[in-house]
Amino acid sequence: MKRAIIAAVFLAIGVACFVAYQTFVLKAAEAPAQQQRAQPAVPVVVASVARKSIPIRLDAIGNVQAIATVAVKSRVDGEVAQVKVADGQEVKSGDVLFVLDTRAIEAQLKQAQANLAHDRALLANAQRDVDRLRPLIQKRDVSQQAFDLATATAASLDATVKADEAAIQNLQVQITYYTIRAPIDGRLGFVTLKAGNDVKAQDVITMVTINQMRPIYVSFAVPQRELPAVRAAVAKGTVPVSVRVPNDPAGEIPGRLDFIDNQVDVATGTIQLKAIFGNRDERLWPGNFVNVQMTLGVQEDAIVVPAAAVQVGQNGSYVFVIKSDNTAEIRQVTVSRTVEGSAIVAKGLSEGERVVTDGQLRLNNGTRVEIRTSAQAPAKTERNS
Image 1: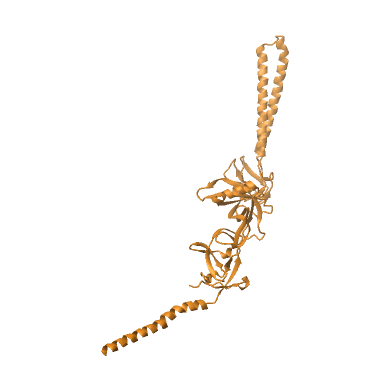
Image 2: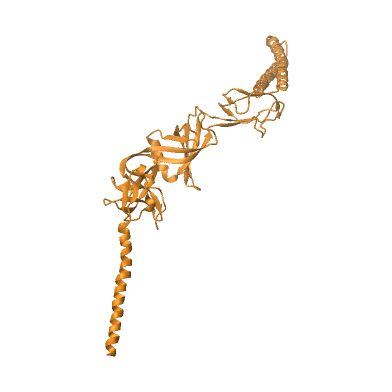
């Protein structure tokens, strides 16, 4: 009898455990699945994967550089008598910048001219002596020595006259140095010397600096891996380059590639390039940093998606592809480059597939979605954990 009671108790305990398992464990396991089925679809905006022709462009940060920069210095010693220009003035080649005091050099020129006149008079007299002695030497009325001396004197004076003429030419050249002119077209910087200042030949002090403004260079660097493509584009013809000046509402400035450096910078692994611009309106200013865009050609039949569709994770770039049953699938992709808001996908997508461009933060693999237009785009929230 006692054993029957014990068996009945164990049986009752087993039944109770089974009922509890059915009630709590299985119900708890079914709850997430039911919640998953009951969870509403996530609203998203999608775009179709397209195949089209896309320009091959390289973007870089460039620096505006003057093609020619001249530091104006004096080639002679003197005093600045007149300053003919103002700070920042635009000048043309040949315009007078400074005039130095010429009184001393003019006095030297007059002295040299007087010496020339004196030596020419002596030469004329010596030549007359030679002319008088020539017939007499034939009659042996004068000695050969006297005739040779007269001839040598005339030759010596002729050399002296030529030396005087050379000295005058030198002074005439030097006197031009006292009027300092602009060697190029350009714009002046700050005029450091004013009237009354003394200057010395090849002094370390620059009187003024001239920067050529038209045309002008923009220097920029691209990775060395792009060099073959750049050279191939140059071989085909003119390579267009455009720049944008920050905070300039006028838009892009067109130009062309003009120079490729003859070596790669081993420290940075980049190659230096220069583009030339007409700069008629002087929107490009030496020293400015600008955004550069160089077009190397056109890539035909490129797979293109909006750049907003591409996300970056621990394993690289990925997108959410919407399958036919309106569920999301994470797809790893390889993006070759981005052009004007479009990402060119080298691997991972096919034409016609749909990718999410807005609403990715709430998506996971298998999440059901509700496709909306951009006007109905969901507010961005943090992804559910």
